[in-house]
Length: 131
Image (cartoon, rainbow, N blue to C red; front, top):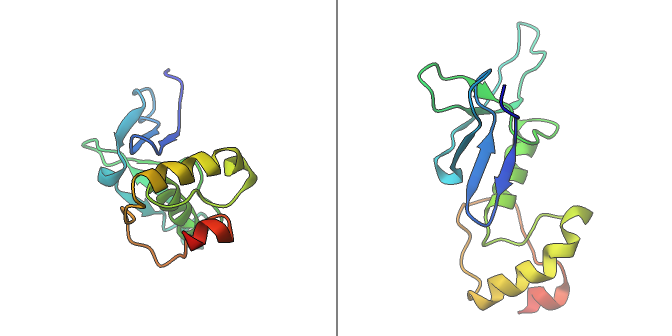
């Protein structure tokens, strides 16, 4: 059985998720991945969990790296993170990379976001926001 991996590759715009049962992991362009959410049982238990539709003939589903509290939180975070034209999402995990990411986007002329969003994604500091 292959090692199951879940990778969000922001730099190259790729997402890796586990294959069905014994099948190898699947790596796809993020822009081509289809997300959906579970409907749960008759009592809605397990509903609104974010899922990735595997590109196979059976249309099976994989749970992505992080689902959050519900599908809306999960997809919001994943889209924010995968859009390399936006600042990194908040969180200590990203703090060591925040300045380098800002400088990269600045050198590229702050290109517009790749994916539309209603969520504000401000720069980390007021000085950066002023630029």
